[in-house]
Every structure is written in C-alpha cells, then in structure tokens.
Image (cartoon, rainbow, N blue to C red; front, side, top):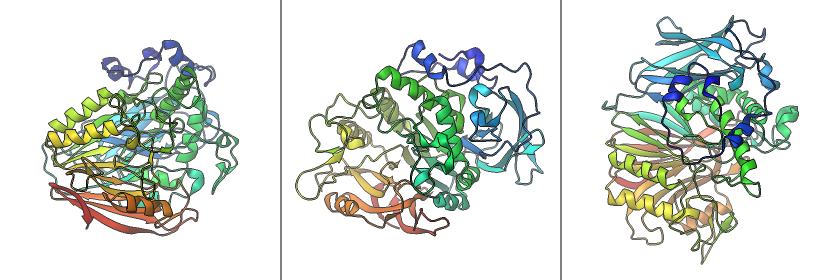
Length: 535
C-alpha cells in the first residue's frame, strides 16, 4: 500500500485517523504495482518553494466540492503544460497560497493559508477549508509565485437544523469530449446553482481518434488509458475545456464515478477478460487520478484499488444526498451483459448492485433522515427499462434491471419504513427519462414509492434528436415512464419544502459550437406525492 509517510502534511493526519470499513481487500503487492512504473524517480523536496515554471500554472482551472456547513474543499492543479509529462512541472514540491473571501473582489478575505503540492499527487491541491459560515456564498483563488488563478464561486451547506426556503442544483453526466462541445456546461455555469452533482463518466478511457475533436493532435489521447500517467493526461485534456472550467468555477460539485473513469462496464474486480490482478492495477491507477482531479476530501483518498466514495451530505432540513457507488462493490453482470430478457440470474437475491454493506448503509441513512427530500445521487436508472416492442421484455444487464433484487430491496425498504420524498437522480443512459418508481412495475395498480429523474449526457452520443425510435419504444412499453428525450444537456432543479421542479435543459446541437440551449420541459413532484407531472 502507499506509505502514510509519503502523504502531504494536509492529508496525513486525517488519513491516519481513519478507521475505514473496507469492502474489498487486495494484496499490498497489487496496490504497489498500481503505482510502480508510472512515475520516474521522484526526489522529495527538502523545502517547499514558491518559484515555479515561468508559464501560467493554472491552465486546468479551479474547483470546489463536498460542501459542509462550515467548510468546502478547494481544488486546483499546477500544470503550465497540461498535456506534457507531469503537466510541465519539475518533480519537486511547491507552496501554493489560497484565499477565501466574502466578495468577488477579495476586499473581505475570511480565510487564507498555504498548502504543499507534491509531484506524487500530480501537483494537485485539495484544501479542506473550515471555519466558514453556513449557507453563505464565498469566492476563492490560488496564487503560485506571481501567478493568480481564476476566481471560483462556492457556497457552504446550511446548518443541520437550518430551514431554507429554496435550493438550486444541477446534475449532469457523460461528457465524451470527442463527441461534442460542452455548450451545456456553459449554460449550467451561467445559472449559478447552489450545488452541482456530477454522476459519472467524467472522462472516457477510449482512445480518442474520431469524432468532433479527436484528441486535438495529442498522441496520448489516441490510446486507451491504463497507467497513472495515461489517466492524468486524460483528465488534463478534458479539464482544458473552458466551458467545463466555467461550470466548476460557478458552484461546488459533488461527484461520483461510473464505469468510463476506469474501463467500460467494469464490475467489482471484473473487467471483461482481463485477469483480476491486472485489472486491479488499472483500477488503482484510475482511482488515484480520479481523486487527484476532483474536489474530494482525504477520506476519499484511495488505498490502491479501494476507494471509499459513497458518502452523505446534508442541506439543512430541506435535503440529504446519499452519494452512491454502483461500480466498486457490485456483482458481475449476468447473461453476458448487453440487453437481454430478465431471468432467474437477474433476479438472484444473492446479487447486489451496491454490495450488501453499502445497501445497509443506504437503508439506515434513509430511515434516520429527517429532511424533507431524500436524494439518491447515483449512476444509472432504477426504473424498469423494457426496450423490446410488443410481447416479452429485454432490459440492460448493466443497470438496476440486471440486479432487480437490489431494486426490490430498495423500493420495499422505502415503502415499509415509510421513507418520504425519495428522489433518484441518475445518468448513464445518454437520454433523459422521468419515471414513477413503483413496487411492481408490471402491475398498473402497484403503489408508487419514489421518483426518478435520469439526465441525458453532456455530449456523449453526438447531437441525438428529440425522440428517437428507442425512446418511443421505452415510452410505449413502460407506462411508469412519464417523459423521454434523446438530446444532449443536463437537468436544473429547484427544491422547496413543498415542491421539486426539474428543468430539462437541452442543446440543439453539440457537434456545432455555440448551439442554443433551451428548456425542453419542466417536471415537478409534490412533497408527499411521489408522482411526476408537468410543472
């Protein structure tokens, strides 16, 4: 495993104090292999220095995330040459100054400090700022030598018992950079939400040698990501996009991964025909690069191929977010994956999408929650997705359909424990879907116990269309589904104690820069009545 002695000072105390419950254990040799050979010899700096490259180091922007009532994580990475090895940085540690202010002009600085950014962590900063006031807007920036970063806007969460009248959030997923421009991110940034949820497929592991912007001529983007360096460069490439940077700068993000941050449709320690030990090495590289490039705290720092990503964040008495990990602990897909008829294998009660420890954590948290809205921030659709026109069924093996016993346990728990106002937010499908979640999808008289909004992709899938043939089949075969759309975009939501509104923002064309973004529909759910209707 990575040595605690090698951790930056800001991380070491928190990580040493953690008594993390680990649901997957690998040998120290496998964890060590994950990092070996991906970096050249590193000589630890004897003292941090503020003298860096002469070039501007904040080419990847800034970000904040995981808001608490008294704090938030601030992120940046020093990378004057973002697509060069090591971002163009010398392999030594640097000092990085940071400031948080109550105003955009930094006339009222409320917190400031210095952090050490080290080559072992890609010269990324994860500053866990505390001592802030609940439910306040703040602005932040970094300084390296004479260079000042862009200014980011963030907002803390309300105090646990605080009553707030309104929360604005956006959720998005799936941003294959070669398949379109990030026009939706520009629109998201302009709306200045209180928080943004990103629900997976931040990068894609595929070699980028096709599409609208096929790697921009960088040879490292034309091959699959496998090593730590590969994943670091892929994140750097994505993060050079100005619209993505603007979205990060506009609000704090709460993030979780799906499959493409590692490899397509991976499940637990399984990834196609790749031997488990080889895959775990790759997964460790992917997790390390993911943590390095996201505004995440020390408890999310991976130990080899093991990462504690599921967590809970509360917004006063209005909402609680259960952020899920539907990849690391799931059983392997059955029936050869793909879209198949459901059978005894998909309904096996011994299989889980979340892993049984995470299931218990989720059910216990939902039961204990006293907030008005209980939000599942997760990767893929809970709802039944019958894709076969006419008699019979065919469902995706990779969604909750392929783990229907997990879905049944979730919905029964919500019903039997009287958990109110559960809303599932998801991505993955590259289409927008809104559904009522019933105890039995095949029984039109079955009780509806929760609601689900699935957001389309930011860019994955090219332009799409308003309603494709597959979308028409879904609406025809799944009466619990209330809305479908196949364009690209994201969802902007407004929560009050009485009502949840979801505004489905769609882009006419992602293959053309600056295409208009518009509201396709606004759907609502009333508190106490988990059925979707037009607002």
